[in-house]
Image (cartoon, rainbow, N blue to C red; front, side):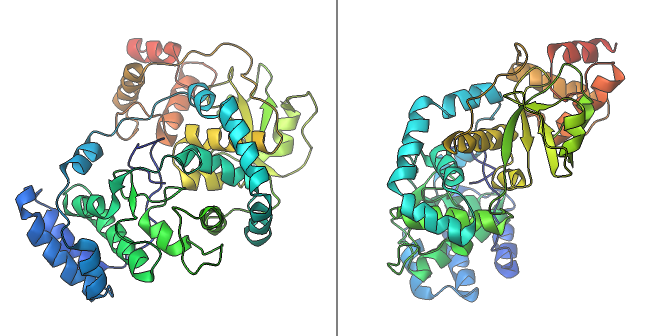
Amino acid sequence: MTRFAAPSILLRMTALAGFAAVTLLGASHAFAAACQPPAAFPKWLQNFKQQAVAQGISPQTANYALDGITYDPVTVAKDRGQAVFAQSFLQFSGRMVSGNRLQGGAALLKRHAATFKRIEQEYGVPGPVLVAFWGLETDFGKIMGNMESIRSLATLSFDCRRPEKFTAELLDALRVIQRGDLSPHEMRGPAHGEVGQFQFQPSTYYNYAVDFDGDGRRDLIRSTPDSLASAANYLKSIGWQGGQPWLEQVRVPADLPWDQADVTIKRPRLFWAKHGVTYLNGQPLPNDAMPVSLVLPMGRSGPAFLTYQNFDVYTEWNNSLVYCLTAAYYASRLAGGPPLAKGNGPVSALSLAELKELQQQLAKQGFDVGKIDGVIGAASREAIRTMQVKYGLPADAYPTAELLRRLRTGR
């Protein structure tokens, strides 16, 4: 669940805890800031062990976890060469919410029905929501990664790119070990230290893992009850509200105030009802004040969704809108919702090179779109919408060939 790596699915969660270790972080940064050669790693590691002990890690735990750890060039190569996640919603959801994955998820809901019932009673998170995350993150625990987490975290803490973040994560990994949840050898995963069936970073593991099977340890690798309940505990902690919706598919008419359709904009449901948005079966939306966002991941001609307050939790779990919509749609299907409606017409997607060029053109217009990487985030969407208004195009914030042409020519 990290936002900085793309091991099995995509960019995942940022760390949530462990940043209080000011002394240790400063020391780590001092050692790594100059991008030291790997030969300096043993000296850095010795300093880290001393500082970890000063932060409450026992000498026994520090030695147990860190003795024999060496610098890992593979981790650094993966970190610096990570792929850009730029698939369209239809591409990604079509691949990830397959018939096999729907059948597998439904079977797991039945197999662990009693566990899901207990979890929902305690945390308010329904089984389909958990199963969808479980399937997307690790294919229900089948693909969790096999790199040594402690070695990866130590290497990234030593590296000069983000030493503060990874030093904090390494500290929390040691706390997980010291608490008795896992051994260093059991902590294996992708290249950024994620662990377990829901790919928790160590900070998330340390703060939100629960012992739900009652065996005295929080085992998010082998224990399905622990894994599911810990994911629910985390989701509740970031705002999940039991008994509330998260996403519904809708149909949109040919004409709408498209500039109001965005995940960052909430309107009363009656606003969209008055503009002719309906459910897929043609039934009208309720004329009530429940706040919703109208989200068009592929513009006005593609699929359309109403997202609710619980959907904001998805965007806390992961900062990719495509991932979040896919996970939420997958959960809705497992909960009995309808198959995906692809929208009102064919939708073409720009290539990664074209998306990068679009961002470059927007930057020339004075917009701060962040890194030119072809990933259309909130800042890029807002810039696209502004330029669509300027050129008299439907302002649905979707990057099109027509907008790119207008930006190239200036008219």
